[in-house]
Length: 258
Image (cartoon, rainbow, N blue to C red; front, side, top):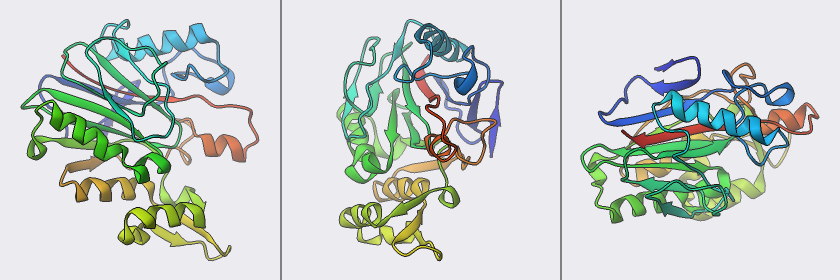
């Protein structure tokens, strides 16, 4: 079950005290055209001033100061960093961890899986960008390791898997399946053969992320929204490619401590 404000989605089963978060839709911003309207992607070809305004709108809608955003130059890695002050998107990594109140941890997606983590008992929160490369390469595990290094308790951490491309929309080749199987021999359950094309599969990326979280013994919830199939609400890199458009916006996910 999910609920939404004008700007973002949350999970009805996850509202821990002292922690604010949101999986933002593409609605409610100031960008236009291909980026209509809440585009958070500074790496897109959108007007940079409008993107900065969108980022502040998103942070402020959750009660954070728009100057206290922490974001990354995402590179589909397994790198997770801990922050205690605002961070501009120049550091190459794919996950953020903090115990500092007031910081808005932000990651960007446009089909990849956004995952937030929270341990309310130690006030430790994190956000991870898990494309297939990052998920297979261990970004979820390195995020958890960084949380534990700050004193978080594995048994008190809950993760929420946000909007991402879903299996019926995500055709991949042998290379992706082989990479997943090389790390986890049971990952084949997340791939359904495409009956029309040899060597092609439909990949349940959010299911794979959930599988990795299960293996790490982390309680998790899933929104189950499909970024590809819901153009009214979400940007999608793959949909943009299929439609021959030159670019697309980026969806924001934010979590932080009050």
